[in-house]
Image (cartoon, rainbow, N blue to C red; front, side):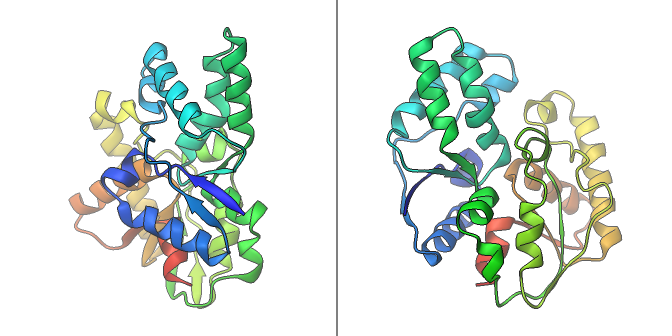
Length: 241
């Protein structure tokens, strides 16, 4: 099986270890990973800010770069939702591009979706885990994509590790894309609430599937003096191989 990897802006710029972990995991399951070098932003930020013209340009580029029939794997619920849910809407008045957008949307998978539904990674499990782990359920992953149990199934399959459910796991962390920049005080307050929820679990690590959320939690954790590690789900799983 061959897939195309869309790394996302945050992984490419700030968290390359997550991209490396994704590749390691996919190759572990015998997947041939292609990384189109012409890839750029999926258009999520301008679309969220109401700049639909700019979002369409980014979407057109994405659709051109990720041409073909191979599955597209994205380690981000918000970016995957942009492609799957918002690309067709961007081109609803352009029939040719609409058909292309729908075709790309059908073969796009968020990373944990692909591991569970295609590779069945949770069935074989991960042999080398340790410590206590909790999970932050990001908004668009949970609500727009409907990905709720897949990350938890993967975490529960790590032998030697203990998954600890978090209170209000699906409550917003305050990142919210442009929301964080426009309303920083509210964003910081929500991030502090999320850190409180993590600390109540007394875990070693909090994980999630969106680096925007994780970056906001990292910032709040640093302001609070630490207490736990923050890692993308792909990194947690790759370390447990």
